[in-house]
Length: 102
Image (cartoon, rainbow, N blue to C red; front, top):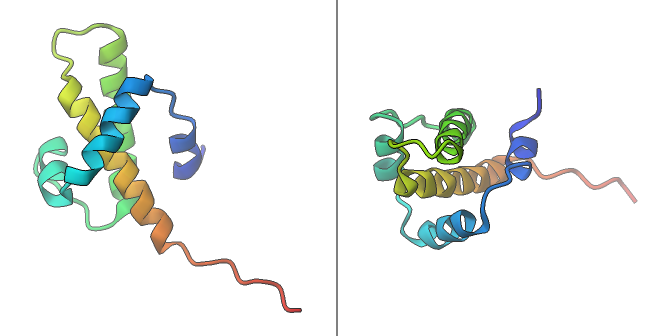
């Protein structure tokens, strides 16, 4: 199984969706948006949140590709925005590599 960062790097979504999600980052509010996306649940840390978001986003992408009647582009943009934000937060919590002694 791939780690979360590799899964995120391998996401291949339409450029318009990605640009819209990047634009939405300025208005992203973790509690509000995650609560809506995750049916009221807001995990405390980015790791578990990302795992759930990635599953949800994969379902949204499948619905988009199938042109499903219940696909909601706004939710998909919010999910991509949340993934970007949570990935950034997760990267910020990673320990910095220790440089080799000189």
